[in-house]
Image (tube, rainbow, N blue to C red; front, side):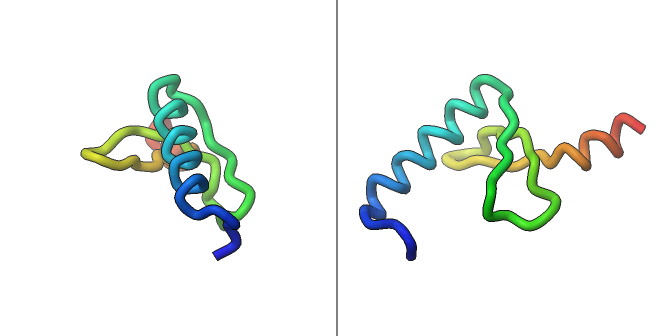
Length: 60
C-alpha cells in the first residue's frame, strides 16, 4: 500500500528475512504491535517469527 515499487519492496523484505534467518538475527520491526522483537527462521518457502518473549518464557 505504501510502497512506490511493490516488487522491489517485496524482494528487499525477502532478502532481509533470509539474512536474518541465516545469521539467527533479531528483527525489531517498527510497524508491528507487541510482541514484535523476533528471531526469524525459515519455514518451507517462507519464514516464521520466534518472538523473544516466547523464548524467554520457555527458558523459564
